[in-house]
Image (tube, rainbow, N blue to C red; front, top):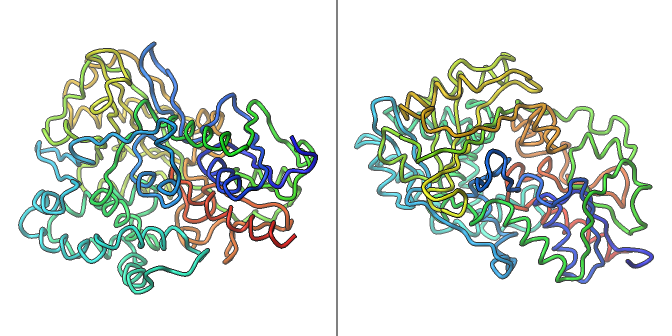
Amino acid sequence: MPSMLDAVVVGAGPNGLTAAVELARRGFSVALFEAKGTVGGGARTEELTLPGFRHDPCSAAHPLAVSSPAFRGLPLERYGLEWLHAELPMAHPFPDGTAAVLSRSVGETAASFGPRDAGAYRRLVTPFLHRWDTLVRDFMSLPLTALPRDPVTLARFGLVGLPPSTWLARRFRDERARTLFAGLVAHVMAPLNGFATSAIGLVFALAAHTRGWPVARGGSQAISDALAAHLRELGGTVHTDYEVKRLDDLPPARAYVFDTSPTALARIAGFGDHYARYRYGPGVFKIDYALDGPVPWTAPEARRAGTVQIGADSAEIGAALRAASRENRAPDAPFLITVQPSVVDPTRAPDGKHVFWVYGHVPHGWNGDLTDAIERQLERFAPGFRDRVLARATAGPPELAARNANYIGGDIATGAVSGLQTLLRPKLSLFPYTTPHPAVFICSQATPPGPGVHGMPGHNAAKAVWRRLRQT
């Protein structure tokens, strides 16, 4: 290791890995330090239940990763990353046994909403479909780390996306489209009437139509392993089982980049109450299942989908979000996001068996058990589900926070996605990756464009770092 490194990165989640790769690509000497025994952060894969059943403890389906400008600019396939697409990216079943779907085809998606809303949905998404690659780059670079490539489309997207999703839902006359769209917004645990929630739902929908909602072959760990392998090939070093409690624990460097929560960064770097106003959001209760067969969904579309949303209607979804985020109680009928990776990846479970991934929203720091409520919901849409269960691994907010220090109170978004903090995080600043110390930067999902496995906070933060390094 050189006596003085150009950059040290703390935290080997997707954003820390991406920041390290981007710096190493530009010829800087980089060392990465991770407290856990393996790299990955929110993109890991482990045998949580039974031997041969490979589960993703956090993120499992990756609509933003496969669309990410950061990842698409890297040769990750060279290091074994392969995206697998289910026949349908997502399905949203209803209690009557039917389902709305999010298909690669806009026509199939619109048709699943029914004739009264098919045209409205086409009109909503069509202006952005053929400009997706430039739109997603511009949107995920906010606050602007580069001039917009297509400012007209970005402005048009802002007009549609900045209002609450409840406003956008008024375009639809029937409940099927409203329910599916409410579920899309709920992926980031945002209240449906919150600022810019229309943009959240629209991004997920456009991602499905343009790039799909794939899983990584072998599990989400493949994303992290590919990034780490690329970093090593570029000359960077990776140190695991290395917990950083203060800056003095790290080797001398010209810049320090933290893929951590703002709270942890303030503690390590001695920033006091600099991030005291940063808000954390609700937590989740997560269950990983080993099943002796596929989930017995009543709706046939759900059996063909990689991701399945569970919520009877938009009112039920809204009530579940309010309970967890505002009423400080676990919802009676939780909204569920489920992923069934073994529908397209048989390597994830023994022959004929399946892995199944599900979580519901709970209050921040909640320490109860949501298992029964989750399984009651699943039985509504997949009768006989419990009979398929071979084993389950549960994790509420305390367990999630112990597994990943960035998930404070079980908040897998590392910060509430509400109000101005939806776009301007962790401070109200046009320079969100900088800190009170000129050589210290933050690159976690607590910075724009926010939560998800896509590497863009790391990519954007790396720009701020290399600009400073070139000036010194």
